Length: 409
Image (tube, rainbow, N blue to C red; front, top):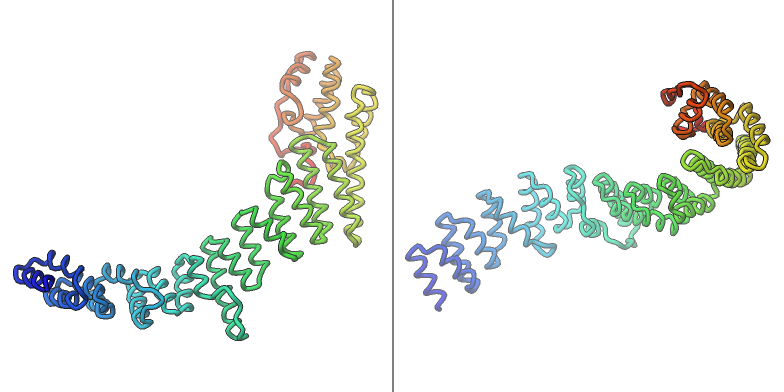
């Protein structure tokens, strides 16, 4: 009764703000009366609020539609859930669609169970698909009816593809997995760059293609300083029974050891592992590749042996180096600059600057850049000692025999 009296006084004296405040706390019938009052006087935002509060959501929505109360409808739509009248949800969705509010339209179509329309809008207008939305669209368990299950899988694949395009790679991978396409799931994960998840997925997947994809991805990481990654690369190639790929990885290891660390001992170990892998493969092409590997191993073994006898038998070292420089396939196995550097450093250490100078000239004449192999101070010392000016390095990449191992890309 007190509410009625207060509301009557507020209406009589035009105290609309007070009337609205009172009505929000009043019983539903009073809220409806107040809503009608505001509607008759054109204060539609207040009418919509009170109609909604009184439980007359449909009428509130109709007011919004009729008078293009966009903001009020947006707020009202936030209160609608799956339990709302499907017709109301559909009406609201169409309204937002007409006004370019595609995210709202998608949410309402999902609430209404119109998953196909919701997904089409996501694809067409690049509306982000959340995991909750995706699970509602297609469920998380297999359906018993074959035709229903086929439709569910089609929806899963569509969601996965859309998620992938949007950069939601984990969601895409999850939906591809639920749809039974683990290879696409793996490719989606690879795009995410989440190494731990990639390794885990490859570990639990009994698929040759997935193991190879995982190993190929891991090769792009810093496997040299991450033993776990190196171990997984080898493990995945072995599981996939891919000896040629494994051999290729070991060859890459050898190249890394040479190019980055000048560690020919480790490079030799890697080449031997590559040869072991190639011996497991079959075919004429692999046999020829194994023969090439064997030749590379032989050349590296000779160079490693020469480095070991520098102090004990320097002449043997020099003879071996000169012999290696005459090998036709030397660039396949050893950087020519390293062979020259071994001899030059030895002669310089013995103050035989004449010999060191001749070798630097030969090295320079082959178009080999000096800086990666010889210390600048050493070069200056040698040339000062023979009364000559130190040479200027050639432009990198020009000239034959630049010291890089053949096969670099």
